[in-house]
Length: 296
Image (cartoon, rainbow, N blue to C red; front, top):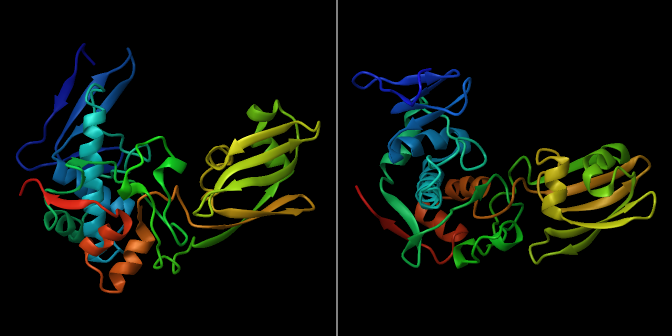
């Protein structure tokens, strides 16, 4: 590449392809070294939202649930834009922000986006980070237990009676002493883990702290969130579980998948199948927030 940035713009109403995926808008290639560059997709907010829906919720979702997800995706993006104003880009295209997959052929995603165009969730005149997750397991979580974000009412947690149909509403995970010891090696100075005990739960029955006891009787306290991160979020699907010792390690019996903050996607789908509109869905998961149409 020559020095400087390169802007790739498709002719007329065309699209661009990168690593097998098709994208609306244009590509900005930004060099970061002599042999590497970042690919930035410059795209309208509404096209971005339509590209989030297939990867974050999927076509099995009812239309009203997709509308709720579209408003969440749009609001999160607007709030994140302000936070990243000096970063040179607005959002990662993966789980660090929202999973964005570009153009998909199913027209339901464009419809859900079009029928909520310009609508944001607002708390005290401002959009906020409308977090969401797969399955809450019966109740959503306060953002304080997961991140250091401001403790606002819409992210304070709420009851969710409509995700019990979900695949990961309940789950069991076996853990061996070896895999736990390997995962926690940086916290235990490579000592073997002998005991795993839950010390504290919060009021949503999610784990606040865990006591780790090593073979040398070293006692270490870590948060439930850190434990999940070290073992892997696809193995420890949430921080809502109980533990039972086994001959080779432990067995975890858990509920839900994800951090538990904001919209429960499976709950939103279940609620929509019961006849709820997107307004009802959003008022359940973001209590105290208002819907406002900022543009058409």
